[in-house]
Length: 200
Image (cartoon, rainbow, N blue to C red):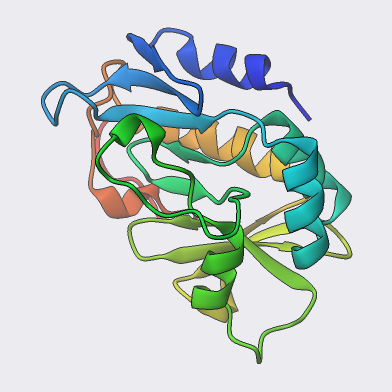
């Protein structure tokens, strides 16, 4: 798994200004949206005690534990992909300071999205914002799968590891945004498995 600095380095390359706080690093300001709107938000690593606490509750596979040692969730390409994070139980969402908004809580998101009828091997780790296509990791094989919306019967795509998923999706999505962070095509083409009909 890449380190936090390696992830940041790849996303910063060729992009605009960054805004850093104790909680996260925001990359490429989208000034036409708002002064605090950024193309990417990468949350700083969770503490070992937090990873252990949430990991035991959610039965993290090893690769997911390693991910949280690198970064505690993320939002990429204007929220096209959001990956959930480890959040202290009882944390209130204080919207008064946008710089200190926590990542989406992996425990709460699994309670919201994943039906008890779903396979107990699957843990929801993220979502594609366009249609809430869920991204899940198999606790046994550690394979990552994106489903169509919230329907765990139909797949959009599958990857061997978290790192492969993020790496291939960042490569694919980077062609759909200009260097200053403007989307070049229809938002639905941010979903895996959708053809992109706009000129490159």
